[in-house]
Length: 178
Image (cartoon, rainbow, N blue to C red; front, side, top):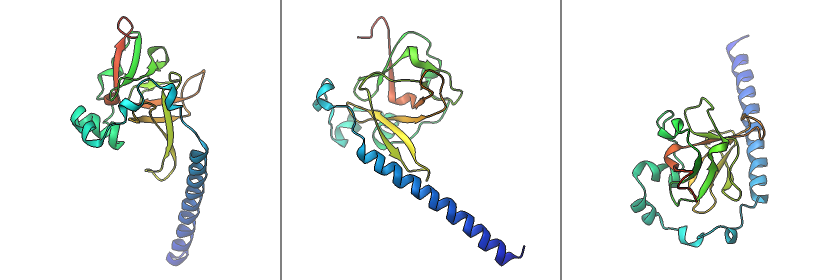
C-alpha cells in the first residue's frame, strides 16, 4: 500500500471511530437528560449541604476538594480504605451522607475501594466524556461530591463495580454507624 493510500485508509478508520464515539456520546447525553436523580426532599439536610465553592475549599483538604468538587481522580493504591475489612458504612467525605454498606465492598484489584451496590437514594449519576468514550460518573446525592465511576464488570448480584476515590469517603465502623 502506498503512503497516500495508507493515509486515506488510516484517516477513514480514525474518522469512523470518532464518528461512532460521537454518536455514543450524543445518545448518552440524551439519556442523561431523561434521567432524574434522587428526590432532594427525601434526602436529610439536603439544603444545608448546597455550599459555595469558597465554603467547600475551607471545609476540605486540597486532595478531597480536587476529587469531590473538581472531579479529579486520586492515585490508585493510595487509600487506606482499600484495606478496610470491618463492618460498617462508607459515607461521603464532604457531607457525611451514607453511600455504601461494607457488605457490598469487594477487592476489584484496581487500587480503589470498590462496591457492587450502593445504599438507596445515595447516588446521582451523569455521563463523563473526559476520555472521549462516555463513562458513567456518580456523585453523592446530598452534596453533589464526585465519588468515582461505575462499570459493568463487577460481581453478582448486580454485575456493577462502583470504583470510588478513597479520599471522597469516610468509614464509619458498625459500632458507631447510625
